[in-house]
Each structure stands twice: as structure tokens, then as C-alpha cells.
Image (cartoon, rainbow, N blue to C red; front, side, top):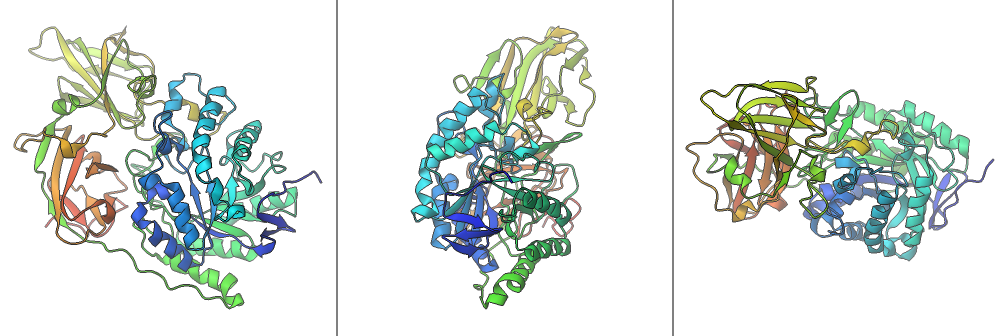
Amino acid sequence: MSQIYESQGSLTFSKGEFLLAGKPFRIISGAIHYFRTFPQNWNDRLQKMKACGLNTIETYVPWNLHEENPGEFNFSGILDVRQFLQQAHQLGLYVIFRPGPYICSEWDFGGLPAWLLSDPDMKVRSNYEGYLNASRRYFNELLPKIVDLQYSRGGPIIAFQIENEFGSYSGDVTHLHEIKKMYIEHGLQELFLTSDNVAGLTVDVFYQHALPTANFKDIKEGRQLFEQIRKWSPEFPLMVTEFWTGWFDHWTSAHDGLDVQDYAYYLMEILKTGASVNFYMFHGGTNFGFMNGANQESTYKPDVTSYDYDALLTEKGDITPKYLKTRELLMKYIYGPQGITLPDIPGDSRVKAYGNRTASGYIRFETFLSSVKSVELERPVPMEMLQTNGEYGQNFGFTLYRANVPHTSAVMAFANLPADRAQIFVNGTLVATLGWKDKNQALRLPKQEHTEGSVRLDILVENHGRVNYGTEELGVLNNQRKGIIGEMTIDGQLLKNVTAFVLDFKNKFSDSNDFGGTDDVKVPGIFKTTLNITDEPSDTFLFMKGWGKGVVLVNDFNIGRYWSAGPQQTLYLPGSLLRKGDNQIVWFEQERIGQDIIFTDRPILDVNNQSTITLD
């Protein structure tokens, strides 16, 4: 037998069993992502985790939020990872820390910052110098903030994951060595692990440097993975770093999840093996703003705003039948035989239906454009290349490309379909929409009657979320630039002299004096209303019934995208984002003007299940 990894930390293993500070230990963990849940709700979720019988939390760390622009770091508010870990510690929970730099997680670009793509030669998840240098700068900021929270120093962290599911991406484990080296240089010494799914647990040369663990939903795949780990060494304890408790949804696809009975069977079989387990997800939370990821299989599939995941807790943190079944099984197989009782289950947070509100203000699209950054271009380029932030470009949102073209009927052609969805306007009138399912990369612009000279061509491109998972061989991750990609022609002539507008919706609409009346409105446009709250704010759900597609900001915070195409129909609005008195609700609508917007007390995550909510 070849040499295997030996932990130098407080969490070790022997004869297929974990030992914490020398004593037998079984990890019963759950995933909660601090960046998907407001800080005011962290304690509630962690208390419910304790009451379910878990002893450990697991969290990823999103590089693209902590360093949204190069060298500009943010570890405050919803990104105060240290405070989150300290709250877990105060409740007696251990921590599995997964700092990446790549995290997958159905998160935009797998957590990697989009500005990496301003380098045309960028090769992520590799030893490409530009990628390693950027990763090193990030870890120089992140890791010193948590190094003293290791168990060996009196903190809660018992394990660190190296990268994420690398086996399904590449066989070049020299990259994993580089990441591990960065960890060690910053004083990380607790147990190192890797985790892979059934497509990736084939890289058999890294088990000498980290503990291999498994990711799966179905126990059939789990047994395959366990067999491979045992084949490498019977000394290795079995650990399911991601037991997928449900699943995520894609826009325009059917609502997904995992039936509670199937889930219970898979969990029971895991527990019977004696394996440790991390419930991914225990609480999913929300892809606030533009942070949802996407998949690229036979076609592009962007994820919805909700990351409810059909997990043990709902998106707003409520107890589910899956939670109760989990608690029951943990009592049966682990705690009951030891005579251990569990804490009482905390109650769910307040939720309230605040009723209907009508749009009370409106900003014309042209007026809005005058308030955003713009850049003059010789030819269209992707948003990441716009250089609106020094040498770096735009990360998220929409980009509007504007140019003057001949007024006669013309054929417009793209070398590649705009990424990911483009609305095409001539003199302010919508003439076509190109989505990721379209096959035709060319279209004829209608002739403009009673027009001389040129007409104004606007192409509004929405970045619907970068792909977060794929293989190096297919090259998907290195090709996640958004906007207009490659050449664009009008009647065979390259489009030139273009103005690009950055619509990342970081505007402080609460300070805006541009809102006017709603007598004469059209889309796209910016709308607003006011929600007045007289008592302590409660959680609620926003239903954009009758409206088409857009994004909502509450008190200047972007709570995410909505789209009548579904499956998701409501947006979760945490009570901690609201305040007593007036709350400003602003939305950018792209397609269709509706009637009232509805604040309801229940979510609609399936477009086929909205009959219970009606207008008053």
C-alpha cells in the first residue's frame, strides 16, 4: 500500500474512524452559507441545526463577493465570515471551512471573480500565473482572518477543503498542491480534505495529501464512492461532504427537489455504514442580486434566485418534514442508543402578507441611462472588457450596446449569440429577443418608414449568471464572458462606434429625484412603490403578478431576479431588510407592465402552484 495522507491537525483518523483530540468523533454537519442569509438570521439557522442533532457546520467562501473588484476587499455585514464562525463556536458547533478559491455552489462563476476574465488568456483552476497570483492575493486577505479560529487554537474549525470537486474538472493535481501550499503558508494546520462526485473521484494521486471524501445524492453512487475510498486505504474514515438533500432550479425548467421518503432511505443507508455526513444543503438561502450560477450541458441553464434547494430548512428558515425526519433518524441511529436528548426545536420566524401595492413612481429608460457609467468603443466587447473600473470591466447585470445604423432594412448577424439574453430595439421599439435557446444568430431589422439617414440600434444584453461547473476539457469556465462576444455585422459590415452602458443596478434609488408619475409608462423602465410598516417588520414574499421579467431592489438592496416564465414566482424578502415606516421597493421591468405587486405570506417556487394567491 502506498503512503496515505496523515492529518497534522486536531481532527485525525485511525482504522476508518475520525478522532477529535484523540477521542472517537462522528461528524454530523450541515451546510449554511452566510452569504445567502442575512446576519440577523444566522443564529436562528444555527440554533435549528443544533436542535436537529448536528454538531458541525460547513460553509463555502465566495471570492467574487469578498473581492468584487481587484484589491478591494469586503468582510462586513452579510460577508462577515469571522462573525458567522464565531456565532457557530458560541453554540458549540464545529466548522468545516471551504475557502476555494473555486466553490461551484450554483454561484456565479463558481465563486470566482468575473474580473479574472479581463485577461484574454485566463485559465482558471490551474497554475496559470495570473490565476495563482490573484488567488494568492485573495488568500492573503481571507486566511489571516480565520487562522486563529482553528480548533488547535481554541476555535471551531476542524477541517479545510482544498479547492472543490477538482477530480471532475482536471487531472492536473499540481494545482491542488499549489492551493494546499497557500493554506500551509498561512498557518492552516487542521485536517485537509477533498470532495468529489462519482464523475471525479478518480484522481488517485492526491489521497497522499488530503483525505478523500464523497459527494452524492443516491446511495448507489455513494457505495461506489465509498468502495473507491476504502480501496485506497481502510484507514480512511468514510465522509459524505455533500449529501445532496434536494436540488436547485433553472429558469424555464420544472421545479426540482428530492422526495422526503427517498431522502430518508438514502440517509438511513448512510448512517448504517457509520459514515460521517454533511447535509448539503441544511439551509439553502437566497442567490441575492445577480449571484446565481448556471449549468452548461446540451444547453445553457441559468439558476433561479431562490436557493431553497428543497433542503431541511426552507429559504426563509422554516422547519420542514425533511428536517423532522432527519432528527428522527439521527435519534434512532446515533443519539438514542447513547441516551442523548436533543434541544427543543425553535419556532419559525414571523411572516406576514402586507397586501398589494401599486406603482407610484416611474423613471424612463433614457433617463436612467444618463445616471449610469458608459464607455465609447470602436467595436462591441464583452462586459468584462469594458474597462469601466480602471483596466477591469463590468461583473454583473445588464449591458446596453448602442450604435447608429442605416435606416433601410438590414441583416444583423452575431459571430456568437449574445450572452445570455438580448432584447433588440430600433429607435426605442422592441423588434426581437434572442435567448440562449435560439439557433439563428442573424436577423433582419425592419425598415423604418418615414426615417432618413440612420436609426438608433440598442442591444440590451442580460448576463443571466455564469456557469459554475464544467470540465477543463470542454473549456466552459474559461469562456464565461458576457455581453456581445466576437464580431457583429450589419449587412456584412462590422458594427463600429458603439456606446456601452453599464447597468449593474448599484444605483442608490433612494437618493434619486428622477422618479415621475405613472400616467405614461413603457418598458423597459424603472418603477417604484412604498411599503409602509407600522410594527416590527416580518419576513414576506414578493409576487410580481402580471409583470414580465426584471430585478427588484428593496431599500437599495438587490433581492434578485423575477421572471413570469418560472418556475419561481415569488422573491423572498427578509424582515431584517425592512424597517418600520416607509420602505422603498424599486423594480426594473424589461417586458410587460403588470398591475399591483403582492406581498404574500407564502412562497411560490413552482409556476404551476400559484392559484392560492390572488389580487385583492
